[in-house]
Amino acid sequence: MHPATDVSQNSLRALSDIALTINSIQEQRALLRHVLEIAMATLEAERGFILLTDDEHDEGFTVKARHNFTDAQLDTLVQPSTSVVYEVLREGAPVLIYEALEDDRFGGSESIVLQQIQSIACVPLRLKERQIGAIYLDSVTQRGRFTRDHLPFLEAVANQAAIALENAQLYQSLREENRQLRTEMQRLHGFDEIIGDSPRMREIFDVMSRVLDSDTTVLIEGESGTGKELVARAIHYNGHRKDKPFVAIFCGALSDELLESELFGHKKGAFTGAASDKKGLFEAADGGTVFLDEVGDLSPRLQTALLRVLQSGEIKRVGETAVRRVDVRILSATNKALGELVKAGDFREDLLYRLNTIPVTMPPLRFRRTDIPMLAHHFLDVYAVRSRAHIRGFTPEALKTLQNYPWPGNVRELQNTVERAVVMARGDLIERPDLRLPDQQTIDPFEPGIALKEAERRIVLRTLNDCDGNISETARVLDVSRRWLHYRLKEWDTSDA
Ligand SMILES: Nc1ncnc2c1ncn2[C@@H]1O[C@H](COP(=O)(O)OP(=O)(O)OP(=O)(O)O)[C@@H](O)[C@H]1O
Ligand SMILES: [Mg+2]
Image (cartoon, rainbow, N blue to C red; front, side, top):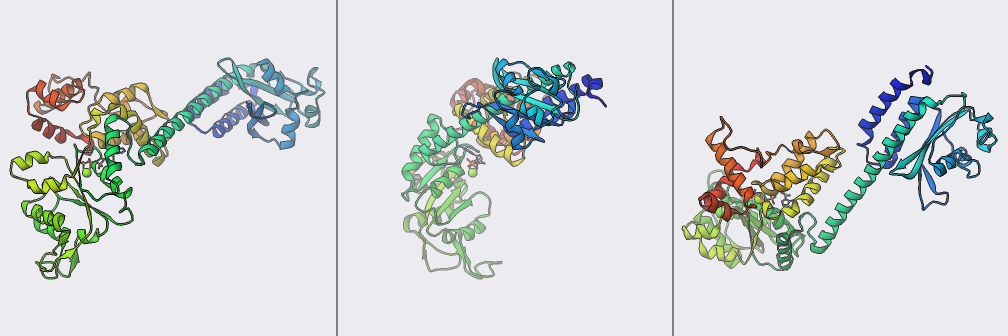
């Protein structure tokens, strides 16, 4: 098939192919290789290259993609005195040579004669009136391979390529900027894995860095998914016990008896099923840190046992009378208000006092909305790399939705939302619908047919949003207790859904 006969149909297909694929390629060389391939295939060129202007290079440009060219051939082709490429870069206009050897201007040039070039098409790459490079195609077998009919196609390819290039660069610099911001932040506080730069988070980092090298107990309070465990781990792994174990114990999961033997170990035969002597987690953590998660769930009996460890540094295995010494640092976390449990008689005041030498309160995400873009980009980086998805970022509407959402499930919910969006996104940007989050302004509590519970949820979340996430204010507006509100928010935490 001669290209001229089918120019329009083939070109259209090629153009839409380019439009579809190149915007998802973020790496410059890969992008240009792809553009060159499509242009060559459509116009049946035998050789081709793309160069970009480059101030750091003596010649003023560098060849970024090439096909069927040796170094020597390229060298002669870009000789300033005779080069078609120079002409295109200088004039900013395409050059088309129907019969190269006979051409008045370029026919005598060394490259054309030596390489027996028959016909050439070369178009500039332009971005907003700026010359940024050129696409060069030629044929060494056929005169008249390229005609005027091909020019609109080639110029359209060049335009698309220029835009995609700019996108790729923008994307690179955005990612770079984001990364730099994060590194800068981490350099400041040294806790790599904890993202956040809001005043509330800075306070947390400040307290954390003060307690690293001591053995004081730290009680980390906060709603579900606010990063309590993350903070506990960071304190351990940045502190002087980092080479010893970090043992996390979830206090709410097991029956009293089982938890006791988990924590302190047991002697063979101490109870049915105790087939051999067993070391408890406190002993396993010797020299390191024990993290008591949901410490508010401990039974009175275990509260007393724990108090003993805190006071004397001694434990007793179940069924044993001898005591053993352990050297552990204790960090604990709770999403219950322990002060209220003490008042209700459900938690020992002396234990709270021991656990709570340094209190840290994790702010809910809706109190630190300025951290949301950085967190969202962080999770995007993690999941996009993991699922090999070429996603560059979020549309402005999507980011705005993320920032305005009340986040009952806090960072964990944000994390799950981004993970899901990476899977849902079809384009190279995450769009608002990909997030699958209800738009706070449009959810209607009076929508016909919805359940009373759902209406309640909508009213609460909407009010919370109107109150900028302030729980006390929301409780006041709705005339409910803060306790009720906390309870509901936990129940609606959508992150595990
Ligand atoms: N500031 C943060 N930067 C990065 N990731 C975070 C941050 N805060 C929380 N996360 C992530 O969110 C998830 C929940 O955090 P974590 O388990 O520490 O919360 P939690 O307060 O212990 O929650 P729960 O009360 O449900 O146990 C984790 O995957 C954690 O890595
Ligand atoms: Mg936790």
